[in-house]
Amino acid sequence: MTNPKIWLSSPHMGGSEQKFVQEAFDSNWVAPLGPNVDGLENELQEYLGQNVFVGALSSGTAAVHLGLILLDVKAGDEVLCQSMTFSASANPIVYLGATPVFIDSEVDTWNLCPTALEEAILDRIAKGKKPKVIVAVHLYGVPYKIDEIRAVAIKYEIPILEDSAEAIGSSHKGQKCGTFGDIGVFSFNGNKVITTSGGGAIITKTRALKDKALFYATQSRDEAPHYQHSEIGYNYRMSNICAGIGRGQMEVLEDRVYLRRKMHTFYVDLFQDIAGVSVFTAASKDDFANYWLSSILIEPQLTNGIDRETVRLAFEAENIESRPLWKPMHLQPIFEKYPYYGNKVAETLFEKGLCLPSGSNLTDFDRARISDVIKKMFGQK
Image (cartoon, rainbow, N blue to C red; front, side, top):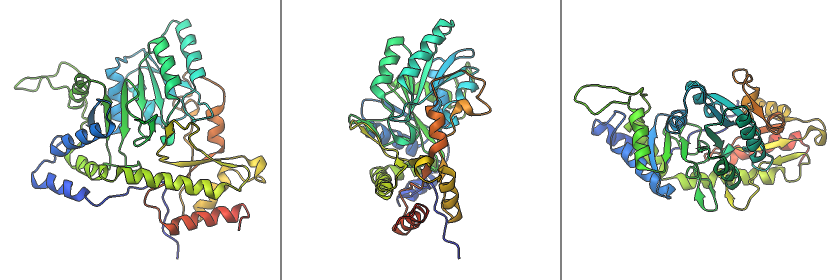
């Protein structure tokens, strides 16, 4: 009999989600508006602090798209984007007819490299095109070099879209991720720390910007007794039912972050005596990472030829899901024609890196199965 699948990162319900969803059905609030939507936005605002404003949307991708619009990105503009990320960080740039300019990672956080970022800005300006926005990502819940990236942004007067899709619960110097950029973004996809099944949120510094985002998200309907539209709009609002799931998830957010971090500690302990394997860990004491996905780097020259793919296939044979790191955007067929600045940090991370099962609902039996695969592979007792 085959053991059940161990997933990389599966949803983990808290128990009260159905109560909020049932309230939506009982009141017939099943549209993209309603008390759960308002409630989720208020709870997120309270959680984040920093006097920010949150709009609940249909996806994190929608939030990136609207964030770029709020930052005045238009066709023909250039947007600087971290290359080591999921494609949803970059796709909306192209939606708008703008050009993504991809930037390499640095080795400490695997995120946007401040040096390569500044080099790109100077070169694009020299070529007659000052970039419009910087898209910075907290990869796998580890904060990017917030102070260094902000310093570059201020120096060249370029706003930051902070992609915190993977980073709810992470923080820098006690301040929550999602509140550092000029615009922030969360994702509540089914594989995230908390979920609304599908959904996301946009985070702004002013109520006026939030209101503008929600105007665009509800088809840009003008104030009129009839349907009138003076601007292009989108169907990007979160439903009251999905928001109900989110409200239940908010009740267990801190616990879910704790359990993700516990999985990271499990991997640190598992690999501590295995030469050639390192667990990705926040390098700065100022950073608190949710470790949405725990990841490792494998150096085959130190492991008798065992590489990332060897480990992935060994897990697959035992019905355990693992996954290579994000393939950098500048290596993707759809994006390889666009400018890229940096060296080969992101490329090397992709070649050597593996994401491991990290869900907050993993059991001791699951951890034992994971441990058995690793110990057999690396000759551990």
